[in-house]
Amino acid sequence: MIILRVQNILIMRYFYLLLAGLLACAHVGAQELKRVEPEFSDFLPLLKLQGYEMYSFDVSSLQGGSYDISFSVKEYEKGTFIKNAPFSLLFPSERIRSYKKVNIGFSPAADSLKNVTFIVGEAGLAMETLALKPLEGIEQNGRYRTKYAYDIRPFEVGDLQPGVFTPLLLLGSYWYDSGGYRFCGEEEFPADMSSRTLPHLPHYYVIGMTVIKQE
Image (cartoon, rainbow, N blue to C red; front, side):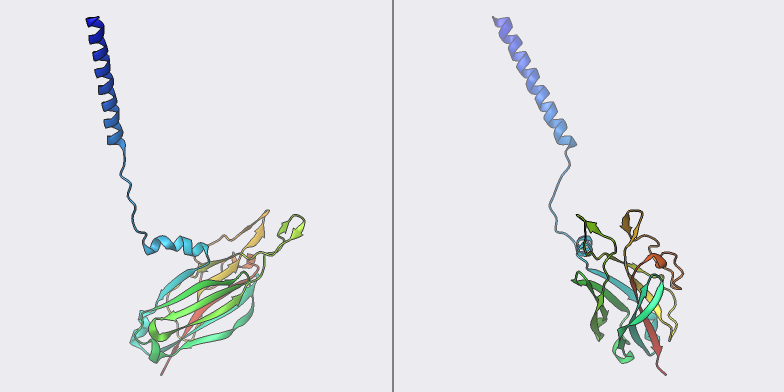
């Protein structure tokens, strides 16, 4: 009887040692998890999904002279120029002389409309609305439905030539290809509009600026 009790004690002691070892190993392998406050950059993917995007351009090279900045939008269909959008925004030199950056933002207005906002520091801002066109050939349950799908791509930027239109951003529609809709091609389009992607786009806008040197 005494021998059996000693064996039971040894077994229980071994069990407790084994359990303690397993708990220690589990503690060593565990990683710490903490809740932290999100930063502004963490919101950017969420904002983009909702149709909000912002692009910034350095214009500090203009500070040595006197220049007006004019923003305008050109409309295209399948690589062919259609017309200039019915607006042109001019920021005169006396209002922009001290600013180093311009911002162009996009926000949803409706399924078929997109707002584009031009911001030049405290010199002012202006917003215009662009009309979108529906995708072609979307069928659901035997009926065609209306859907809009556009993406934004920047152009390659370099020197600003006074009096010359400089393309900055493209707002373009997806196109149908091989059983699906896509928007592929360059991440940055060449400024001379030589991209082979552009003729595939059913509809797009080119947003750009012209600097005008004041004598």
